[in-house]
Length: 365
Ligand code: PEP
Ligand code: MN
Image 1 (cartoon, rainbow, N blue to C red):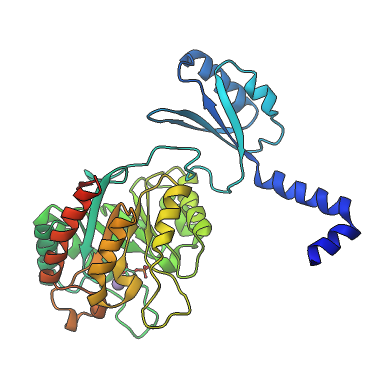
Image 2: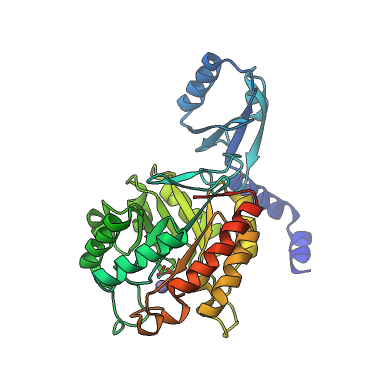
């Protein structure tokens, strides 16, 4: 009723400000091209748009060819766009994310991590300990998770710990041990970066993880966006899905479109688990964006005994992959032991996951 009162008092100015808000939100346009539009004419049209100062996101999918316009599209009249013979239809888009938007790119993106494909019907499992602790530990874990069917090896070297007195990770020495484990198994490696200055150390890492605590470290997002390695972006502890996708947009806007999203649980009022796993968010993310979505049930619940059921539920909710913490001796782990599966437990889980992935018509990579 407050807004009604305001509207009654100032009907004109309210309408104008709402209109401006809508315009601001709709400063993006997508143009669907005709299937048989000749290339030369399409190119000519693109030049015309570029001359108007617009950036074009060209997406040729399985059955659609879409031009996503980035920039100030307010001045462009829909009637002008529709008058071009190569255009089937056009519409304005209100979401603030563009390159990550499913409307810009209707087909699922498939991200390739050193030959391991994730997304668009390709399923992959990332597994390994929370932290790299020694050469024997990481190599043993690497061999066991690979034998169980995981295609990517994880291990933290730079650890974002709540307490400065907790184990902070083996840092660059840990990265070297992770590379030794890769040499022993052939599995591509995934590890977390916490600082832009560390980027040179990550040159040989196959998939760079940006952790939950850094999801809105915009300088870090831009820096990983300026390099070519794929990025595993974890959802922040208390971030909305739109904020999450906007962080992916930061990386993509710099030129790196190889982004994999990871739902890892969010803060709620619930205290019996470390976080609350937002599986509905996985379904929604697939509607919002074309990027693959991986689920990390380990950090989501904090209890090893819960991980298998949550992992199965994630596959059923349409996840494109899983990230699971596995430790050779969880009771002695330097970090996150309580949520880590033993190699045997992981083995058993993977036998089910393999069948489940097949049941849902996806390919295990
Ligand atoms: C991790 O993957 O070990 C980690 C620290 O995860 P998150 O950033 O989701 O807490
Ligand atoms: Mn962890």
